[in-house]
Length: 340
Image 1 (cartoon, rainbow, N blue to C red):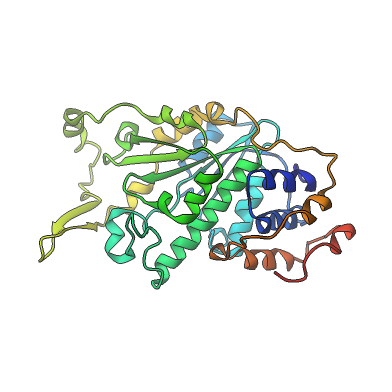
Image 2 (tube, rainbow, N blue to C red):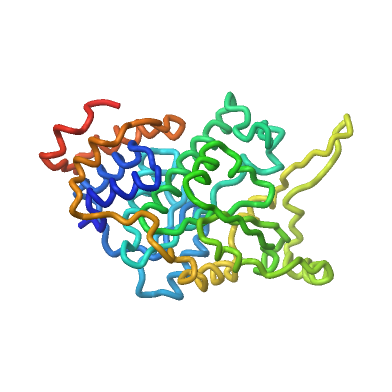
C-alpha cells in the first residue's frame, strides 16, 4: 500500500514547484500493483558505490529499513535509464512519511571536476560543457535527473544531501541552479582526511539542511598529514591527480590510476553519516497537504509547463505507462493525456 495518497503527491509536488511531468511519473508508480511501499525507509543512498553509508546506518538503526542503489550492482540501477530513474523515485516515495528520511547522493563527479575540464569543456562560464560529446550529454542528463530527485525528496518530507569534490561545478549547471531557486540550499566543506581517508580530498556538501556543517572537523593539519600519509597508503598508490604544464605553459591536470579509489567512503565517514541521521531529518514539513482536496481537481488546474526533456521525462512516463502491473483508477482515465 502506498504511503502517500494521490492528493498528497500532487499537492506536495505542486507546492514545491515541481514539474507536472514528475507528478505524472509518481502517480504511475503509486498505481503499479507490483511495487511495495512498506516498510518505510529511514535512509536512501543513491550512487552508493560500496554502500559504506548504508551499511553504517543499518548497523546503528537495525530495526529501520534502508535502500542503496548504484550501477555497480546492476545496470537496471543506472539513473540514466527509465528503470533506474523509476527505482530512485520509488525509493523516495517509500521514505518515512511521518518522521522523515535522509537521501544521500554521492553523485558521479567525473564530468564536473577540474581533471576533466579539458575533455568536457566545462567552466564556470559554460558549466554545461560541450554537449556534442556523448559523455558530457549523458552527464548533463544525469544532473537533470538528480535535480528532480532532490525536488521529489524535498516534497516528500526528506532531506537530500549531495556530496562532491571541492572542484566540482555540478551545482553551476542550470538544473541544479533551478533547484537552488526552489528552496534554500546550504553548502559546507570538510576534509576526507579527517575520516581516515588515504588522501586529503577537500569535499563539499549541499543540502536544504544547514546541519551538514557538523561534518566539518577543522582545518587540515599539515604536520599530521605528513606524519600519517605513508601509513594510510601502505600500497604506495600514486596521488589521484598530477599537475603539469603543457607546451604553452598552461597548467593541466590528469587523473591517475588511483583516482577512482577516492570515491569510496571510509568506514569512519559512514559512521559519521549514521551518527547525524537524527539531526539531518527534516525539522518541519515544507509542503503540508490537505487530504480532503480532490486530486483530480489539482491535476486539472496544473499546467504542464517545462517537460524536462533534458531529463527524458517523457520517456520515463512512457516506460511506466507500459508496465503490465499498472492499474489506473477508472476515474483517472478520462483526465490523463493520451500522449505527451
